[in-house]
Length: 247
Image (cartoon, rainbow, N blue to C red; front, side, top):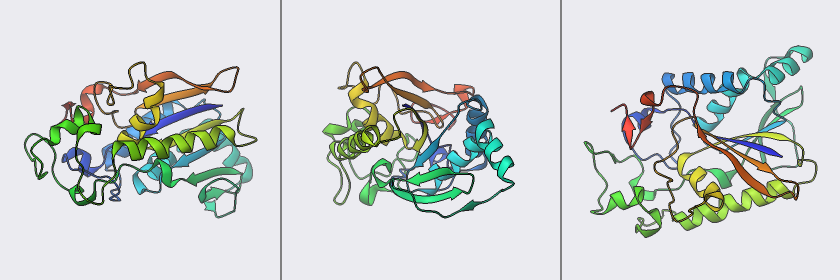
């Protein structure tokens, strides 16, 4: 099993330094272009299925990536189809699938952290609106930050993303599959936390850039290991990120 875990492309709120969380913000035009560039870099990967979070920005990212994928396009061409049709599958909540048999699933466990009442508020140096004096602790060690009522903690996200990976690796018939997973920056860091050399460093220096790709692969004993991390296929100076890039 080989998992290509990609953060979604840029959104308007990424550019504006606003907390998104569960708020369903779509990609902007630049975010779509980042996803296409990433898809071109992964064009030769023979993806067998795709899993996204329930939010629009991850679905858009996945479809842009798949749109550049040669195996995916060949299967659609052979079937003479261009749209997706709903069908039922035994994994997760199916979003939609083209009738060539390429599945696209949504899984609630890989949705972004819920920021509660902080969602939509500015969190950058020049637009800080978070009513919390020590909010910058979120980008140092989120385990130490007291989240608002109704929000999730870092521990919450670690638990649900770990459950997602556990079920995926235990699902019969997936052991030899190549799977595209599109989700979110915090969710990715939480999911990969057990695989880092220093799990105490949650952010590993910074949040994943938009469309950064991390790869988990099973070893000879069926255990996942991190074989590539935070790879991007565009100039990092273009990345909208809390620790540099465009303002």
